[in-house]
Length: 163
Length: 285
Image 1 (cartoon, chains in turn yellow, brown):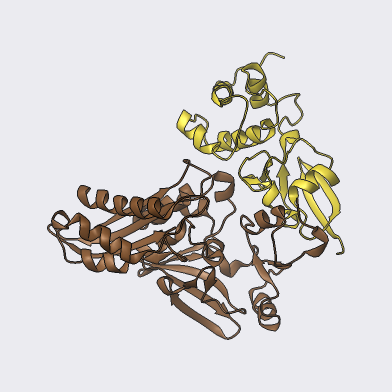
Image 2 (tube, rainbow over the protein chains, first blue to last red):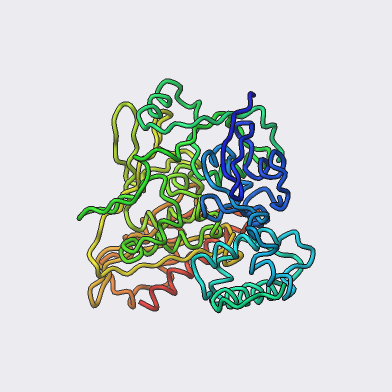
């Protein structure tokens, strides 16, 4: 099967690459683009470790044919901080123990990012629903919700983060 | 990734007429692919038997929710997220929004489509019981023209539908009803999200102060196809819900469904829980 050319925007940078017609967005992001933050946990859309934002929409990249990202914007965990060292969410996960082994963390951060873009003051129920598709085997989830809540508070108050 | 990706092809059709021509010229060769939340799971598992796919996600005629005085028409590409965000659907067809909210999780809801759910024809899909409760119609189209199929006749046997090899679902149409309806949807699964149901019951009824004037009951997970509980509907029509005999309801449900035992549940559990859901609902009515 011949490869097909794929043009899209990854974390703000234009990308031109080649992929097989049914190659997954997950594999293009990790292999062709070298951004290995996005993980494969299950390969069936259950665990959320592969979560990315596709044109701002939360998706499981293990279930997205890469060609459907043609001319679209993809945000992965590597793109969350922009030109800062860490985003507010990343800093909050770090400060509040939101990560242990870290394998679920990129997906959690992307799902949390998606939530906070829509809801600046999520309740615990809001957070649980928004992250219902992200599984964690280590933390028991409570520190993740604390981290998101603190990040949301920080963003609402516009307070300066310690560097 | 357990599949050999070299064996698969994916092309894109953005023009609706070109898509229909492709389906007509090579019937059964090109399987439509939208959100991928069914197809890609099989691909990843190494179990995808079909090899050639056509991406239909950019076809305008399949998108959008259209409201007319008599119907709400949901384009085949409308996602679960779009469905549950739609104010009029929430108000007039809450069972469908309930189904959309309980399908998978947000990332799946953002990608999975109503047309895909219907065409995939799983007997335990979440939308079908809701669609049955609202007596939905499925508009299918080919180069030969379009036709409207009552949804209760759409599924013929396990994963076999009315769709001809050159046809594609264009939209699902819901007839708008008077506002005084009672709606119910309950999916029984292992978790509050990311679960496949053991059984699923949805209904919509019109009542007077003393009796059930009309009722449509959709069942999932208790047969080879999503089905209407015809005997049960006949039993309940015209009846005062408080005077219905529980054993009669249990017997009618038993006549309506053929549950099996599989890795998710047993026939006894599926039957018993379906009966219990309806009886509990009637007691609270």
